[in-house]
Image 1: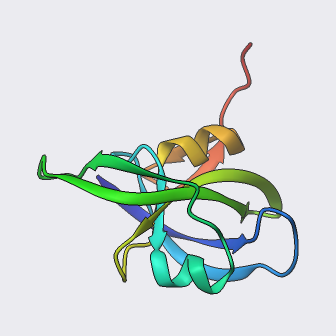
Image 2: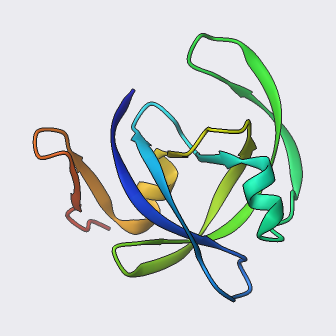
Length: 116
C-alpha cells in the first residue's frame, strides 16, 4: 500500500556520488524496488535472481542486489530489486535498516523506537 513519496539518494555500495530520486513509501512491499535501467546506470550489480509476488498475487522474476541508499542524511547499504521502469518504491526492509516508521497522517517518516 503506497502512502507518500520521499526523496532518496541511491548509489553504488562501494561509494561515489548519489543520484536523487522520488520514491513512494510502500508499506506493503518488503524490499525497495527501483527501475533496472536506473540501477544499471549507477553500475549497481544484480547479484541474484529471485521470484517475487507483486500486489495482485502474480509471481515475477527480478534481479536484486545491494545499493547505498540515503534518507534524511543517513546512509546504509540496502537490498534493492531491479524492477520495471517507473517503479520507485521504498519497502519495509529499507525502513527497518534506517530505523524509520511511517506517520501516515503527517505523511512522513519518523524515527522508530530502538529495541534489542
